[in-house]
Length: 123
Image 1 (cartoon, rainbow, N blue to C red):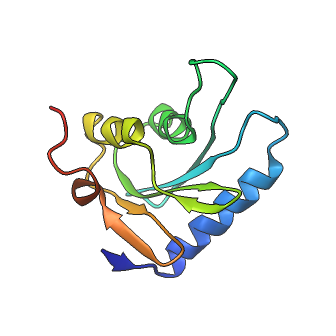
Image 2 (cartoon, rainbow, N blue to C red):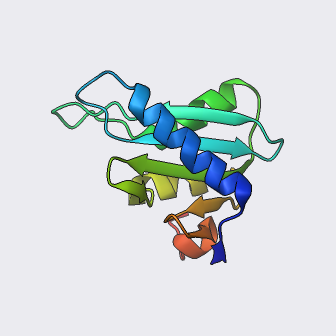
């Protein structure tokens, strides 16, 4: 684990701003990705009252990939209660897509490398 730096705190701030902009009663999570090139990508979850909900992290990943990037430096997800760790499905997705071993911000104070957050991932 590592403590957050200034850029990490800026990503949290951007995620909070994105969450405030959302209009749907069904979206409760925002995610921000900083790619290895330093570009920022955003996503909000598409939570609906059925099993077809989509988390915010895959939305941000999709935006990044459509722009031709394949490596993540840092990712954060946030809800009204604050920074949240990605769910297990999103952790596995990050791993399976081979997007590097990004930093995952897990609180307002700490971040951890994906491989440490998801040890012994399904291959």
